[in-house]
Length: 343
Image (cartoon, rainbow, N blue to C red; front, side, top):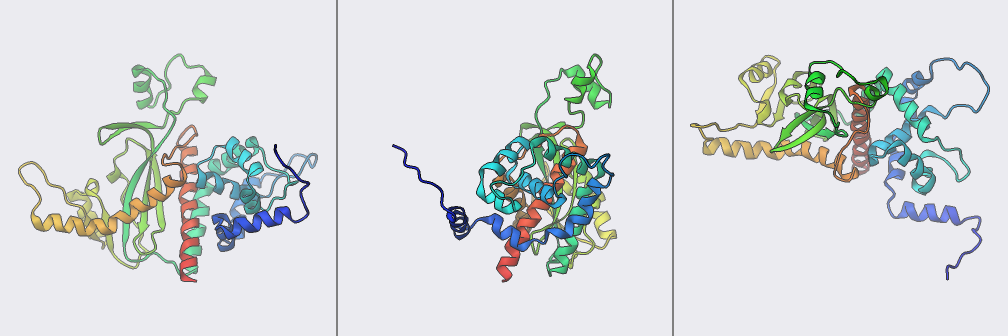
């Protein structure tokens, strides 16, 4: 028989206290981050004047941004994050909502992110927090590591002819307007280690000292890693070393790095007829110890997402917003850990 009792006045407070004692990571995140630094850019989303004062007032911009952070940290859909906010005490506390508080529905959350992506505000939010990191003593240092990771998108059930037209930048013939709106014309296929993937790539530059993302770019998955290289370089880093895997190594890239004043720490790769020497293999092992820190970043991002990063959006503009927010969310949690360690 299920035993129930009338909830007492302090039952909720006691439950929240227990969650805090058990190490609720969202409590530490709230304590470490000054969310108000983002407000000037978030207010741009609501910059248009309301047509009427009738109806309920809009939700606070910072509250909506924190919901997008939750979506990014836990790889949740709009419907799922609405449900989790209503269901989880830790989410409610993170957002400053009570049991009787009004919760944004999935459509409201979708619309806020849609406006954010249309304006490209995720770039400004990322830059603002990067400035905050420097102000707090976490400037880019000890060189930088450049790498890319595939972010999967829902597979499109297109014919070969339709895919060929899409590659040519054309909309396949016979598609109705509603069907075209549901098709992602920007994502692409790529093979990695013999496995085909469909989606986008998250290209990042991580500083080797603090393991924070300093620059990022988003392309479709078919774009070779080396094509997004120079734009990721961070001239503010305290050291000139640049680590990357062998996919970035070419005579052209080495020349560009030298001209820009960087020291290349790029993995070497043997070719037929010229295997790597013992010294080159040792150099690769030495460089790998630093370069693996970038893999830790991707690992942390996918860990909370159940090991499978996915964008549930259509088009590269929305994908760029979602991936950019995920990179920012990583930096928020990484800063929280660095701050706690220093304390």
